[in-house]
View 1 (cartoon, rainbow, N blue to C red):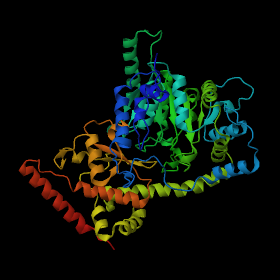
View 2: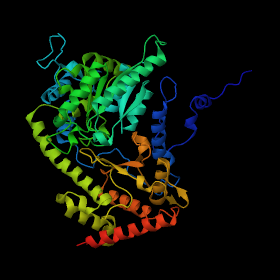
View 3: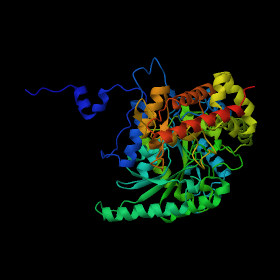
Length: 540
């Protein structure tokens, strides 16, 4: 008689990873086609898994660590018009009805009015009777539970097995994983110091052509078609560099758009950090505002990052009707519809009324100043108080002194030894900064040499219980460098104490492995450096 295994046993045979209780990040997941991630994406997945799970120890509940890798925006009131719209809906609307899959047309009209006011235009419109003078209609828009869900759907729609999504490096690592989980392949376009970490159009064109030619040779229509580059993910502002391409970079954006259009490559224009560009006169410019580029561009907006509403998970997409139709189909097949309340919030935040724009100016004037202050706070701790914007200097001195006391404040406000920001990489938006730890590469702690990203994260975790995303997590383009992406959106006290803990950890490093003459020079240089710095600095 055949003995049947239990239902849970069968489940665990297919998903052995469920045997392990995890804390921190859940399992990264697998591709829908069952294939392995390509080496580039697997490397990112491994690094994110190490940061989010493996480096953490069994004492995590009793002794919480300090996470500088968080993606949460600064603690700030949510955008008032969005809250008002939700409250009004709850007070006045009947909630017994299921929402339409595509979303309420009144909300979509509000979103349409907003993007048209921001300059969206379709110069190659369809002939439907509801197309307006900008070549658009509500059928160019739908919304869902976050831009992440929309991104997954978009990749699934536009790609076939073997097709490539091109992303920048540095990048938001989880989007590269999501692209492959959805069935595409991911390749990286390196952003380089010589280009100020902006997209170089010539290098973009060469990279697309190189990948397409390689695919042509490998596949030779074995699948009945030749895979190709189908999309370029244009995060503007970029996560994690904080670089912005606004109206001042119009020529650059036009070249990027033209190169992709000529090669049949969709641009996925990720604008989620757009409204916290620090320069209000040069916020990120959507590519769909460039005449002739709308139909080849898929634009993503959301409330999470800029509007202090990450917990709501609300985003919307603007694209050609053909793309929107299939997103709606997939939403219906996978989840039926998005909650109506997130549509109300989106309509409250993104509309063309003068009241909305007046509230926007007040809200973001304050919020941008907060982010500028917090970046300067981080800068004072990393590079020294003399490097910060003079507007924030007194406040930073008081904040750091109140948190650490005069003696420790005088130490940390001289900056971190061996660590600095990469050249040409000061953020222009958002709340992330890249720190360059390459100066400690080769140094030792308790006999263990720091050579890799994993070594770097282990060192800071065991000495200060601090963690952040390392270069491998974000496709840092320089393999010989050790860098970390840190968030400065965390509370001031948490940030100050974390960087001070990094400072004290750096002082534990051993340089005895150097030949004696080299060690003598290094040690005396550091001593003299700190004597000079301390002589210039006095806590008042």
